[in-house]
Length: 56
Image (tube, rainbow, N blue to C red; front, top):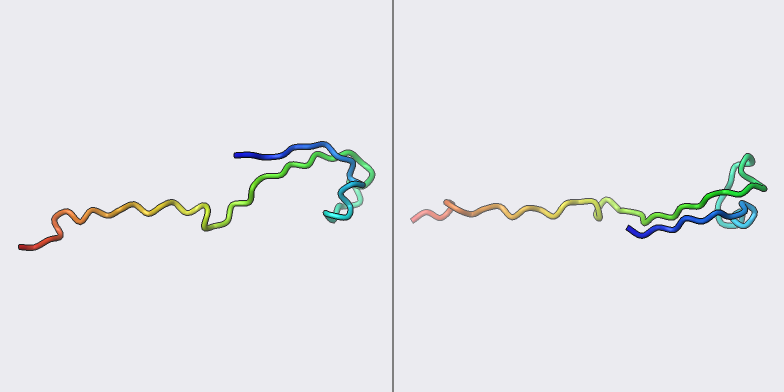
């Protein structure tokens, strides 16, 4: 999994992210991870065996 981790001045982020007052004018660590939708997390369905389902 790829990700990005940087240390930035929070003033550079004010126009992008709403920051609480306690983080303003400080250095902050920014970590960017890929977002996984529910669809991305679903496991592929296992194929069910049809063995014994044919009647002669």
